Image (tube, rainbow, N blue to C red; front, top):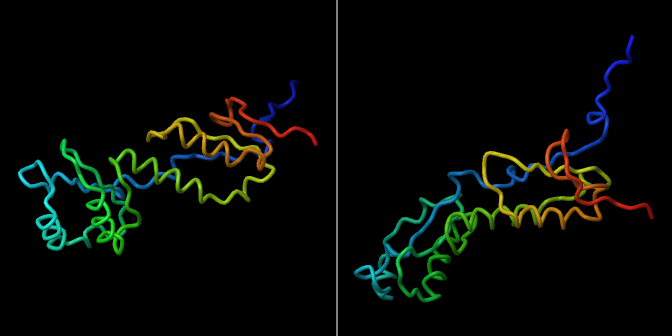
Length: 171
């Protein structure tokens, strides 16, 4: 009789880290397009802008991440972003300049920056590479930098098929 098969992968203490779990929910990021505040679609006039900002019900952005951008080819003064940020502050989880994709990646980086590394101390960590949502390269770099020196080893892929990234050497 042959010896039973042993799953050596399952025997190793490996922690899988899925960066997708740190992305905001798809419907949690909403955009405010400054083109909607432009006079004749060309310029931002302060008096009109402030009147429109004051007339808007910003409570619709409660508990959301809000990104502010302008899809029109117009020069937008910096104070316009600041005014919108100030009225959104009581409602939004965060206010980010740029398009929705940029905002999602920024939120991901913020979430990874706040990640508690204690559960990863001395462990083998596999950073999951495939998923349903796109994760920017910057997030993989950020988590690698954060866990280098803390974990025992960092790998990329799936526990059954990994690419070694970093390993703690003996002292």
